Structures are given as structure tokens and as C-alpha cells.
Amino acid sequence: MKYIVFSNAINAWTLKKGLKKLNIELDVYHEQKKNNVVKHSISKVPLNSTLFFTEENSLKKYVKSNSYQFHPRFFSEELLDDKYNFAEFLCGIGEKPIPYSDIASVLDYPFFLKAKHSWKNNIKLPRGFICENEHKLNSSLNRLKKENLNENWFFKQKLLTSPLENNISTSGFFDHKNNKRNIMIVTKKTLGNEEKIATGVVVETIRDPNGLIPRTIKLLNALEYTGPFELEFFYEESDNEYYILELNPRFWMQHGIFVDYYDNAIIRRYLSIDQPKDWVENGIPLFKKIVWIDNIHYMRCYLNLKLDSLKKFRQLEGAKVFYPSRVRTLKFYFNLLLKKIF
Image (cartoon, rainbow, N blue to C red):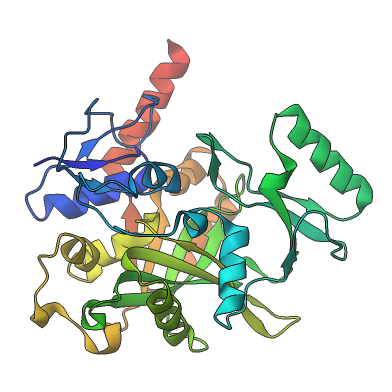
């Protein structure tokens, strides 16, 4: 049997590390053979392979297939990668998405013109645009036209103004048929990539600040969900509200926290090789203060002599895990250098 992932960035490297602990080799299928953290290693996906997903575009292609092993096995395509429909679903079960409206409705400025989908027709969509006024909205809509993107793929969402560290996630593995198998932790995004603020480069474990784990259990049971997940919340201080941002029904970068500190728990559950002795009460493991760091960004700070950023890294408290490894990160930058030279 083949074990295959459909990406070649940090989260794929994390899966390779976790599977290596189980003496399993992970192959990488990726249509774009550009330089990244791990190399493309397979050009065909054999039937009955075990598949691992780190982004929604690949998952959408396989979610209806019965010829492979993966989670989530069954997931509504309407909710899989449609943030607007997911917000509607949240309202239907009494949950609290960020206030939103469709693109034709009125929403007070400023607002976030947000993409409904991460991917559409195999195209990675821009995350969205901040619109402070009508001029900025029209400018954003004109940009969509120039890029041949349908404006109906976007919707309006209240612009949140609280600090980045108010972006809090519950994550782990969930089994709606047997909640005893659940395992989840709570993390906050401490630092974001300066070029792409949506991507966390430092994530820290925290204790549940406001009953987010019970809300997560309620939501995932309502979805009849089984698989790895990350559910993002955001605490908006002006509203004193923990809104739900989105659900990532897949592996994500920071699941390395589980690989290193929670007995590889997500991958073991994913492969159904966990045992009752592995299960923890109410799905909540013993709290450990852990700091996950994107090593590529960390190394970039060294290379560019960003002393303020490096000072922030040194001030972080807790056990630190760097992904990918130092060796893998150096190889990544060495390959980038070779590409520039030749």
C-alpha cells in the first residue's frame, strides 16, 4: 500500500516525520514540481492507497471516491470549501460566525471582501480585500474582473480589528462515532508572516479561554465529522465575542505539536492504530506549554538580520518545536540559491 500526500510544503514534511516514527514511507504527489520543503516523488496515485490532505483542492477531488483510504470520508461538498455556506450552517445550529452578508447586500464599511473558497477551478483564490469605502470596493471588484475571477465567489464579512493573537484554534482528531477517540488542544497564533498575515509562523498552546472545546465538539458532532481538523475562532474585543472563522477539515502545519508531544496521536488515529489506552478523558490531553515555530521564517529572519523579530523568538516561553528541521530548512534555502544562480 502507498501512503500519499498532495502537497510539498511544511505540512507534508510534518506528515513524513510522523509516519517515519511508524516506519511508514510517505510519497509526495504534486502537479507543480517547483522547489519546496519536500520533493515530488510519485506521478500516479494507485488504487487503495492511504491519502493525506493538507489543502482543500485535493480533498475535493477525492471526497466522493471509495477507492482510497482517507479522512474525512464523507463531507458535504457544499461545506467543504465554501465559507459562506459554512457560515449559514453555523447559524442553523445556533453558532456564531463572523457577521456577514452576500455581495449584493449592505454591510457597513469597513468590511472584508472575503473569498468563499480557498480554491476554485484549481485556482488558488486571494484570501480577500479590506474595503474601507465604496472606492476601495470598486477597485477590488475591478481587480477580480482583470484576473477573470467571478465576484460571486466572494462575500462581505465584518472587518475584525483585534490583535493577531486573538486568533485561537482548537485542533486535533475527531471521531463522531466514538468521541472517546477524540484528542484536541487549544492554540493561539502569536506571530504571522509579514508578507501573508493569514499564515501563522509562531503558534502557542494555551488553556481553553472560553468553552471553545465544548463548542467544537457540538459543531463536529453536528457535521458527523471524523478526521483531522482545525477549527479557527477569533475573539473580537469590541464585541466581547468568540466568533468562528472557519473549519479546516484536514492536516495543517501545526499538527507537528502532536507528532512531537502527544505520541503522534493524530496520525495514529487517522490510521486506526490507536488503542483505548491512548484515549484521554473528554478528548483533552494533559496541558503542555509548547511553541510551534515555522523554521523557514525563523531562518529568513537570521538571513535578513531582522533583529527585532529574532528578539521576539528568544522571548517565547515553553518547549519549542521547529518545523521543518534545521537540515531540511538549510537545504530549502540552498536550493533557492542554486535556482537564482542558474
